[in-house]
Length: 297
View (cartoon, one colour):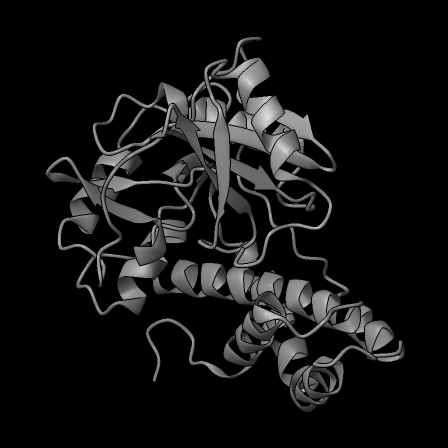
């Protein structure tokens, strides 16, 4: 997130890190990076040492699911996985206010300007890995009644600065959303659990990091056992020539965009101030309602 959270202070983050990960930590700084979670640089004597993340409570990212995903990532014996670090009590997550804290080591490097050339090879190696014991199997988190839920939401006040624009946008695409939900349900029944592999879930350029002469995949909170197209959809969207099941790519494009539409709609119907994060949410809602599906347009 670009703006600091209002429900957790820097001092609380520092205390959690010092207590469970690094007692020498003496400073934290909120970083305006990523989306969904909040991030901090953690310093020891002026040197960046750790990278702390606070995930908000979401149906798809509860503390239990985050713990399982991070524990699974930490067991992957792959040289491109930048894993979470266990804390003093042996787990990977702890509560911090209403959010869930986790930590990785600090990794000096940079996000590539475009997706790296070796991403298909990295994903092929990931998909060939033995499933970690704590990895959950994918099941859809979409409510089949999403169109009705959106209609109910549209009956509520949309009083925030960006609410009216978001509401008008949603009204104009509600019929289309209903069609996507029905298509998603049909495709979901085609997924074969016997063919599930370890997937990152969001291997796009924002979760790629170039450091120490190699590419790393970061942010493993969405790790699941799933059809490989859950990751390959990113490659198809980028125009990469990789073997894939078109219907499974379509399934995971719909899974992503419908989840995002529901999340952004709830955000913008609720109280907000029109800050950078709110404007980003409106941009996200606009994009998910209007962009082509992967492999189209």
